[in-house]
Image 1 (tube, rainbow, N blue to C red):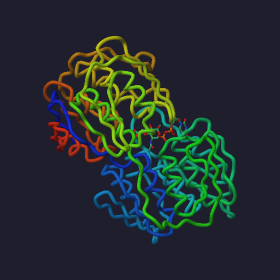
Image 2: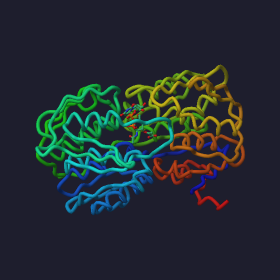
Image 3: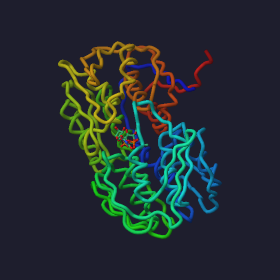
Length: 424
Ligand code: EPU
């Protein structure tokens, strides 16, 4: 296990470059096995989730090589093999192998996915989609076994009960090679869905409407990668650095962003008083000033992202007066950061799934634990703001999704170190 050790209270300034989107990358890597030819992904973030997905690829004899920000994946000699528990449990996104294996082989055996502890995360909509395409899905001994009829999968119209990112991506992957047309209604509209569709279309798939709530897929026989694909910038990583800059920045420029992907987030933080100048693909956040309290309700894209409700919390704690409210409508139980922030002196509590925040003049460093990735990001910002030393246990959860985080924070002037946790 890793620990992040922070000596806080130092104003941070300079430049930070955002990596490729984690939540695109973790879908694109499984989707690569749909190609009959080698795949090249550019702008890949250096995060633990990528290492884990590469290990899963190797279990299927798919060779991959990650150098700088380029990931090469060769699925030419792929063997159809079950993916039992083990690594599958280490990340949620391993469930994309269900859709990818179905699209490539018409069958899949995948251990039940693990992932962040952020409350119940059912996959009924994924399964409903596979079944609509003609697949038979069985849950046996903590494994999901999926088979297709002899004639293969067929197109279908699938109405999702909620715009699920994972179900939309999984159904796209399973249906790109199904016979006929598939329509996904009430599809998720996140930018990562468009990224997946672009990647697959460049390999010969026919997917239209990605980014709207109705996606139409015409099945094709097979896919072949021909050109490298550059992953979109990580809007959640960008939002995390904006929050940090608004709390403790002394002028921070954040590069490689697509501003439009952050519209709801920027509207909220600017309303709070964070001053931002946008240029083509960079944002300059002016030195932290007085902030007003606010109320936030998360929702699907283009609403305020659930993945940013914890990283934005330190901004609310920095406000001068009033009571802040955060309601996470996507994951109401995503509250693992609250008890930890309270240990640092934060005036924050939760009542009936409503997070109530009061201004906290000073946080103090102490030992806390990152229960999941975004709780970890929130504690990291809190640690940078706090007096004294903050030790974040389970920092592995931060490394799962934040690209080169120690390097980036040090470039901004932070006193931060990631090390193996001592045996206790
Ligand atoms: N839901 C169901 N049934 C389903 C699928 C989803 O009830 O079959 C519910 C969920 O419980 C949740 C809502 O629908 O309340 C939305 O879930 P969604 O399926 O969209 O989430 P996901 O695909 O499992 C992805 C990201 C999450 C991010 C959510 C929401 C990946 C690997 N994960 O999860 O990212 O919070 O979309 O935007 O892309 C993170 O990066 O920190 C993270 C947790």
